[in-house]
Length: 312
Ligand code: CP
Ligand code: NVA
Image (cartoon, rainbow, N blue to C red; front, side):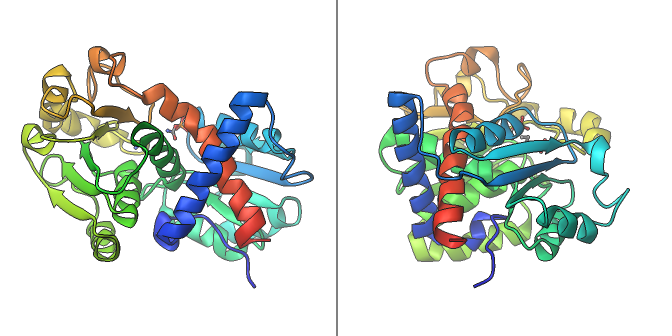
């Protein structure tokens, strides 16, 4: 059997996604209770390739490997020049001789697919311009911890239909939640991602809607989620984006329209005063820091499943 990558939630069944989430819960519980996990990844080595900056993805993967007895090292944008200093196919084949898994953060999603095609070891997508599946795992874990379920919840993404929105939408559609996107016209999640979500929703009983009015969108919401209006690589569009997104700010007035039990999520980094106010981010309904910490636990769950199940 060939190796299996983690490039998109779309490639995994609801059962496989749940297996990662349950594994993450277990590893988190054990870590919180005892300060350690078994060395499931003893002797395994990870290369972490970054074309863009990172705090959470870099630190949480490095520590996830350490907690499970493995080893990870960082290769920044200046170091290997993925596709610039050296062809992606060559980088993939060279690294495959040194490490057991490659995690990469890239601009163009086609580049992570190319890396995976040429690598003989599994590749993990640590964010591309198209999606951010590791973030969605931590999001799923956080929502599951908060409500004891994901199925049937109303999850509203307010803002830009970006990489984080795509993976959250696919998580919701795979696991039977009701997903609403609320953002300005012209900034919906890509058509291809929406069509895929519709096929998952048919299987799971999830629903998918677009609602331009954010106040209508968040009515009865269990989860309000937002992210930056200007993603990494979109800096040239910043001025235009700053003009169209302000009606989609997640502020106290908007949050008040959701269920009183609703949680507010953000993948971070946040731009306080833009897509989210201080009041909301530091308020009682915000779970953003637990969500960030869950990157560590969700990625341990992912790595455990990756090596013990799909690449055993
Ligand atoms: N949420 C997230 O991926 O954060 P970083 O960009 O800091 O890794
Ligand atoms: N949408 C953001 C997410 C950062 C984790 C970006 O791509 O910059």
